[in-house]
Length: 443
Ligand code: PA5
Image (cartoon, rainbow, N blue to C red; front, side):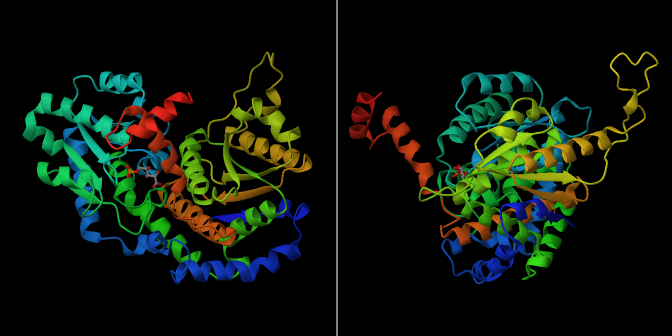
């Protein structure tokens, strides 16, 4: 199971402060578990890995098997919490180059997460004349980005396979009863999966929102859920020494109170990039409220040491850094011997890249700590489905705890609506006419 090393944080925050925070952590945990806090109606993710609907899950695995057998590509249409979790898991376990690999699972394309015409046209071109399916994921069904992409791809499917063939290739993940997509799915008789009422988008990766595309990509979803379920049990411990989620939530809360305003999440595996994007939404949307909250930022290391390393070492000292480290090598690739030694690297010959990467992490950790950036290190035993499931649950619980201690509602996102109202007004959506003229005058 994962562990948290917060040794370096004690330079900025005393051990005493950690133990003094324990009652507050216990209170926050109890508030979450008893469902009495702000946004409590959206905390079903807390027990989901043990409570999900087994019959729906079996149907989901059958749908994923069908997609794998009848499609060379799957287009996953969704934005924010309706796509980041799936992409995070597929890239972490299947590689950022998943689509380029030789495999017996379909290519996965993510659409509906922007409004770029060239992006969507390119996906359509990359699918070419191959058989494909669509998983449209939207709680409301009216979010502009996925709704526009779905119109286009639905038309493409209907042109290619006819209305009945298209119907069999469209899977809708949406609200169980309400919303535009639910209505459309029922009219058109698409196979549907439910976005649970009590789980918001950014906490939904282990629901059908994430699981259908993840299963279609061939990831072992049983192991992913088992990892989350085991983490759920272990992270229910109500003591700082026993609960890594408490330790992480405590470190970031105390550092925030000590004046840090930016949390940088770093990882030394490039395939982790979209877990970082998922983490950014999780913490940013949960805590960025009432003019407060740590700004979540991500680094891909070692690449970003050559672009952001200078700032990390000597820029504004408002940073804390959280590093996710995988402790087991997944590849034994090592540096070859070169008789010429023109690059002077023979001192590394025979050494595994895993070990060189590890020394890079250790050197960077010490440099950043010496430079005044406290580091919290999350050690994960291995990068596989089981441990990734545990890590996802760990981050969600830590987020619920620290958001509760921050005193905000960690489970709503009222600020996301502001841009939408302006965009609708500028697009001339019926009902928004008055605001449109006023907004245009300001541009
Ligand atoms: O976390 C969230 O709630 C958001 O990111 C939503 O998932 C996102 O806005 C998409 O909304 P919808 O699923 O209604 O299309």
